[in-house]
Length: 474
Ligand code: NAD
Image (cartoon, rainbow, N blue to C red; front, top):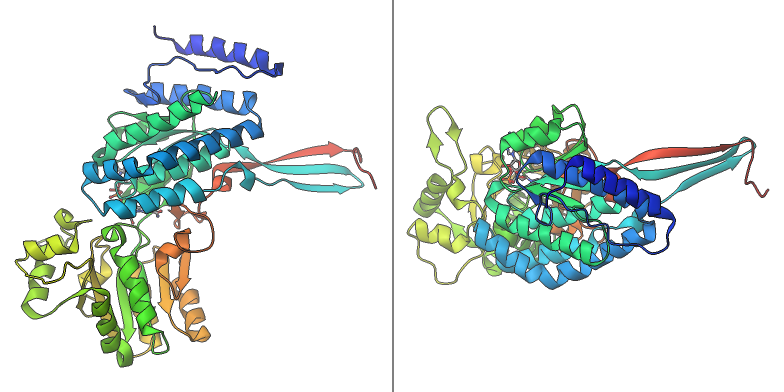
């Protein structure tokens, strides 16, 4: 049996009427979707709109917290399965690393407890300001962290009292459907509203436009490349844009070189370098460069030189007349060993990372390669390193790091690079709570300034004013 929008409205009215009752019945609104998966944008938005009204009008904050906790428990049980499904569908990255990414967002994305209240009292009354829901949010997700972004966005957005219509990356749509259905089923089993999360089964650029133009969508959140973020910014709606990065790392003459090599090798090879915040190129001060490369080799990196270097670079960054050097998508997120094999290079120990020395203006330095081929540039001084790193970062203001014991060097770089995430003496994953302090996110909003997004990013401020000194006790 199918329900029209009118039927749904009547159901909502009934539910709202029963709001006084202590017993929370499961308000499972029947809809055209299958646990959140819909054929049409219109139906996905409509269902998410009904669900959002239920969430804010019928559920207390305590109940919201309970739903988020139930989600964490169920997702934790499925982290391994989700990681495997993502790997099998996208063929990108490393399965074991994907488990770690999933656990990070499941356990370390802040929930409703992150919403605080500000209050001011005075002769003229009581003022309370709170983080209120935005409404229905349209969220665009990338292929590089497909379910990780959905989980992270879902926990943040639902915690803020919102519901979400996802336009997922087409190359990960089956796993994303599984993930969204799993979460909706868990919410319903825990007496929450149906369709807190919805998606279109066949996402396209056209469905992105339909979602962003829909009058019931109050906010757009885009996690992905620059073109997508720029397209969303034209929607005329409040937009949170989390765009591309090309994180540079500086190693200066005061650095602990062994530690720098361990950290950079780990970060740049994690999930085959498909994370936006992964180190993408290093600028190393001349006097320590050879020693640093030696330590990278000790970590297991394969140093490409001479003909081998030329061959791999031509393969991963072919030159096309009229387009210049382009990243060969065939190698994005692929294993370092496979890249060597395709180039016909023999190796004795399977590497996780290939390294090579190039000049600072090489396309491998300037482009976001998203594969485990890591360029190292020798520079004369910290000043040259900073100048080159700022050029390579390309104004993304995303992520950068430095290995140094010189506080002045760290400060000079931080001021010049202006990135959302700035890590000192550690791999850049630490900047999103994976092995570092602070909470986790998969939506790092540099272009629009929200930074490491959390539940508060997806709320709006509302003020409540009780006039004439009421409620004061002093
Ligand atoms: P992508 O931009 O190709 O796709 C992301 C999403 O946007 C997909 O759902 C896609 O269908 C949609 N899309 C693409 N072009 C669009 C357009 N012109 N209009 C509307 N929608 C469009 O990115 P990807 O390959 O999935 O992910 C990798 C990119 O995302 C990298 O550049 C990476 O740095 C970036 N990224 C950034 C963050 C962050 O938090 N800042 C997180 C993950 C990935």
